[in-house]
Length: 388
Image (cartoon, rainbow, N blue to C red; front, side, top):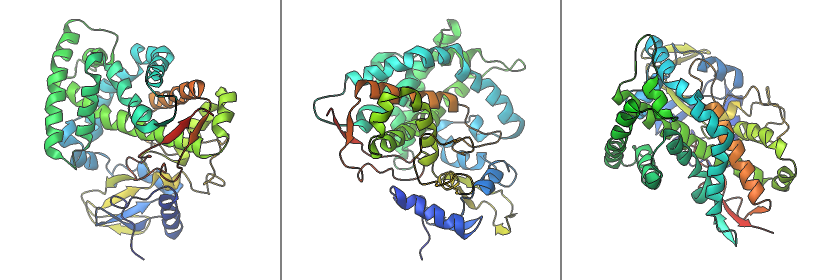
């Protein structure tokens, strides 16, 4: 049987989960492919948790240096050791600031309502293009304190930057445009700080060290894949899960307090980073009796671990009442996602507002809406009928 290529195969809906389940049963570390090259896939929960924490055999920065650094620039995600710790200390407090706290409590709901106001409620609508694709990027621009009259332009730059592999020339142009756009904003915040994330990045200090302008630009650009694209996919997957299971949308409309549990279950059941590519150490290693050549592709099968029946009984069933504390969606260890709390709040409020405004939504074509791909993974379209 041909090996699954986790970069090139579309893997819609249950196709991905069947492939991961077969490999999980086959071995703790199973052969696979990635962009046509040999790879190793880890999909057992306990083995993947071990691999996440093993920075010597699976150094996180290697893949990011190759895939993101050419357009993002150097940021803590592509650093390791003391340098990673220092820059993470400088950058991440901005996302636990008063600006973020205020946004979580009031502004995020207002922004979600703003997008819903623009949705045509008289017939059919695609929730990807009108809502799940737009909300995360608008959250980023509002938190950064960007002028609102250029938000659509900023969104297009973000999308272009993320498509570096498909169109590197356009991605580099988008980097130049974003940097040209950010430069006067950063300069203005140094002179006159405000209650926004850029001001927090400007003010950040650890042992007398501040971020330079170029470092601030890199950390802002980093928000596009880590805060924008992954949340966009997660919101699409969440909406798909709620609309795909008959009666669940209406049930949550009657019990809004249950939305948090639905969010956690969706993060487990259909994560937007289903398979995370990593590279093995630059010298040959052995892991669970498998010998891996230097710089091998190693695929962290998060979606497989999140459906490991050894941890989650009846794992393919979507159950909003399930306890999901052991899911690996945001990764354990010292490189776990620093924006996971804001991401969760984004998802909760986005769904709460949509259910409040449209308590009767019907998914038109569930097969068309199935999430696809692995990183990011999400629906291409979510066509719904609004109203009864």
